Image 1: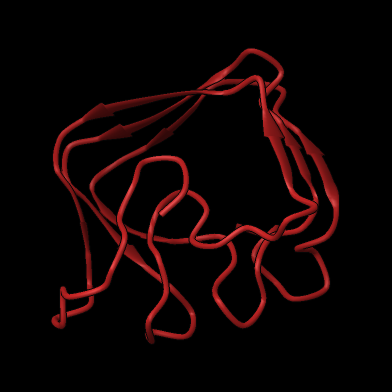
Image 2: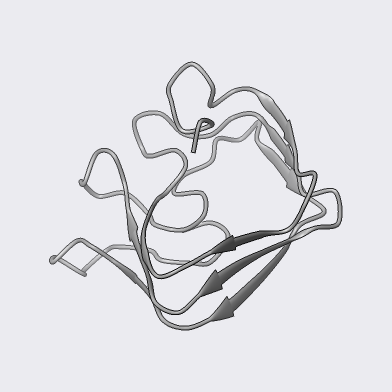
Length: 105
């Protein structure tokens, strides 16, 4: 979650282990105003969303929802597997024009 601050959204990140995200909420990394523009190398690891996960975003506007909510053209996301063993939803009650995905909304 430390990635998800305006000053860190353009950084370079490498996973060093698998990650399991349990039930509850996950704040999507990046939004329409400040998208993720850095590099994220999964290093062959897996991120698992278990149980039921509700995606949120910092703007709660017309953003997309996922591990990454919004990515810029210069973003590079690679070498990561996503597993989902439950339902993925978003917290926006106006579901029209909202995109929800495991990796990128």
